[in-house]
Length: 332
Ligand code: ATP
Ligand code: MG
Image (cartoon, rainbow, N blue to C red; front, side, top):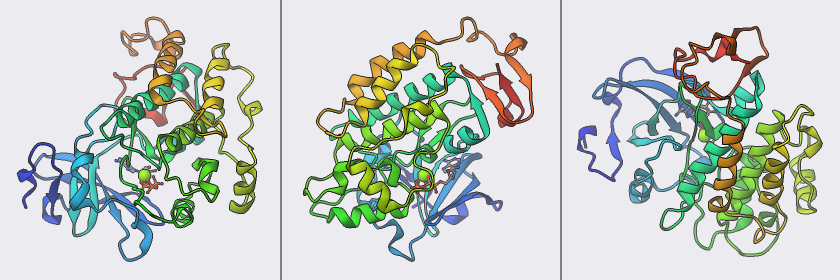
C-alpha cells in the first residue's frame, strides 16, 4: 500500500522508496537502530526506528499489522506521533525529535528547577492521556531515553504502546525481556514476586517516579549495582536516595518529592493514578514559572548566555531559538 493510502485512525504502510536516499544514524541500541530520514511524499524529516527481527529481541512489541490502529489513535502534543510502519526494513516511522532524548540532556546540561518541574508535568500530561484511553494504554517502557525533546525543548513520550503484555504470559520471561533492554531500574517490585498478576497502570506510575528522581537529581539510579542485587533490594523496599536531590532546591520541591515517593510506593494499590497527579504537577510547574519569559526569549537577553558545558537550561519554551541550538544556549 502506498503511504498516501493511510485512512484516518489507521497507520500507514511505508516502503523503502518512500524515503530519501540519506539515512542519518541517530542512535544504535542492542535491539534497534534509529535513523533520521526524509519522507519524500511529505517532504518532511521523520525518525525510522528499525527493529532487530532476527532475534527474539522485539517479541513483546505489538504485532503491528493487527494491533497498531490503537497506537494510531494517540494524537496529543505530549506523545511522539507514529506515522506508520515499514515492513522492509522492519521499522516504526515516527515524528523526528530534533533535540534527542532526556537521558542525554540530563547528562550534558544543568537543568534549572522551573524547567525540571515543567518537564515532569509534561510527562504527567502524556501519561494521563494514555491511561485515560479506553481501554487504558499502558506504556511499560517509560524511561528517560523514551522521553524525547522537540525543537523548543518540550517533552514528548516515545515508544508508547509498543511493548505489550500478552495474556497468560510468564512474568519471569517478561521481566527478562525488560531487563535485557536495560530497564531494571524502572520495574516495580511486584514484578519480582511470583504472583500471577499482570502489569497494570501502577507499573507505569512506578517508572514515572524513577523518571522524576532522575530529573530532580540529574543522576542515574543505582549506579554499578547488578541486576540480582537490585532485584533483591527493590523487592525489600529500597529506592534511589532522596538525599541526592540538590540542596539548592526550591521549597516546592518537597511536594514534588512527596508525589515521587507516593508513586514508588511498595504497595501498588497505594500509588496514585496519573489523573490524581496531573493537577498537582500543573500547580507546581505554574508556581515556578519565570514571570514574563513567555513573551519572547529573544527580548530577554539576560536569560540567555553562551557557555561551555555544563550548560544551563531553564524554564519555558525556547520558541525563538533556532532548532538544535541547545548545545550553545543557556537560560539562567
Ligand atoms: P527502547 O527500544 O526500549 O525504547 P531506547 O529508547 O534506548 O530503548 P530507541 O527507542 O531505539 O532505544 O531509541 C534510541 C535513541 O534514538 C533514543 O535515546 C533517542 O536518542 C533516539 N530517538 C529515538 N526515537 C527518536 C525520534 N523519534 N526522534 C529523534 N531521535 C529519536
Ligand atoms: Mg525508545
